[in-house]
Image (cartoon, rainbow, N blue to C red; front, side, top):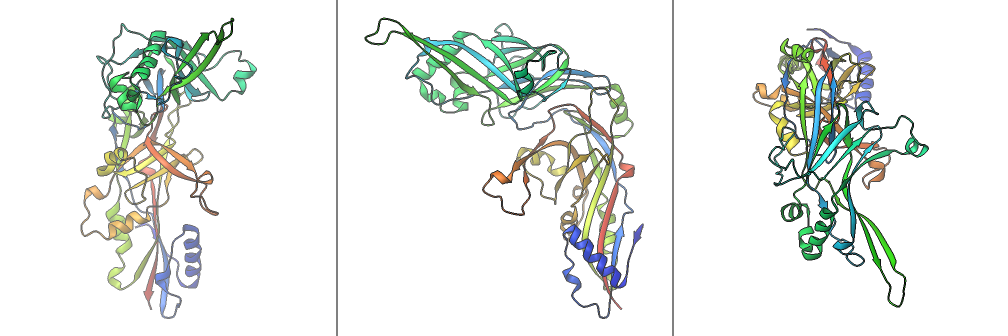
Length: 468
C-alpha cells in the first residue's frame, strides 16, 4: 500500500485545512486532543482496469438535428440524416387569410454559424420528403427511414455551404445562418385548409401527425465535407391577399409571414446516425485499448477498485481507531488522437454504474454523485477529474455485501447542458452561477480519445484518531 501519514498537532492543522478546501467535516474527532493521536492518511495505491465497448445505437432526447457527412482518415466516416414531426401553431390567421391565400411555404433550417464540423465552403446538398408512416417514440440513432417515405415524392432540395468565401458585412456580424428549402405551394394550402375545416387536428403534435402530416425525412443528398447541427427546424408560410376594400376602386394587398410549424421537444425527432470507424481505431479496440469515440463509436467499461479502497479505509477498525473520510477522487488521463480535422476527446464524460446506464438516459436523470458522476475534459492536464466520489464510498460501506454491480462503471461521452441560475427564481447570493439541466449521449460532432487507465490516479484521504 502506498500511503502517508502525519501525526500530532501539525496533522490536525493540515487536516483542518484539508477539510476546508474539500468541504468535508471532521466533527467526529472532537474538540480535545488529550490522550489522542490524529493522523491524515493518503492512499493512492490503486489500479483501474477497463475495456472498450462498441456502441452502435444511442438515443439522445433533443430537438437539435445533425445533417451531413464527413470523412476523416483518422476517425472514419460519419453521416446523419433526420426524421421529424412538427408541432403546429394552434392559431392560424383565418381572420385575414384563407387557404387560397397561401403564396408559398418554406422549410427553414437554422444553425449557429459555428455549429459545424468540416469545410465551411464545401457545397452540401439535402433533399426533403414527406413521411408516409407515423414515427414512434422508441426510435433511436439506428433508425432506418427506408420504407417510411416515398423517394419519388420529393418536396424540395437545396445546395448550401456554412460560409461564403467573400461574406458580406451582414453575414460577418450574423450569429446564425439559415438553409431555406422551398416546398410545394399545394402543401401549404392543404395544411391551412385542414385548420380551416378541422381546427381540432392542430391540438398538439401527436394529433397533427396522425391526422394531417406525419412529418419529414431530411436526407443528405450531396457532399462529404461537413456535418451541421441545426437548432431550428420549421415551416414558414407566406400569405398574400389581394382585395378591393368596400367603397374603393383600387385593389389593396395584405401580406403575412408566419412560422406555423416547428420541431420541438414535444414531438418526435431523430438523428439517423451511421458511423464507420477508421481502421486504426478498430485496431486499438481489438488490442484492448480503452477508447472513447462518439457518436455511435465506443465507450469504456471500468472496474473501480472498490474492495481495495474499502479495505484501506477500514483497516484500522479492529484497533479501535476512528476513521473519518475526507475525500475520494479519480483522475483519468486521456490521449488525443492526431488528426487534421480538429477532433478532440469528448467535452464531458459520464461515469455511471453499468447496471444503471440505460435507465439514466431513459429517465433523463442528472448525476447524483453516488451512482453517477460527470467530469469535464481538461485540455491542459489532458484528463478527466472526478473530484467527489466520497458519497459513493460512504454508500458502499453501508452495504452488507459488495457485488460486481457495485463497482462496474460505464464511461460515456456526453453533452452536459446548463441552466443559468441568475435568470431563474432559484438563484440566491453565493449559489453557483449555473446548474446542470440535461445530460445526453454525445452526438453533435466527432470526438475521440484513448484513456490511459494504467496511469489513472485514485486518491483516498481520511483522518484517523487513535487513543494513546
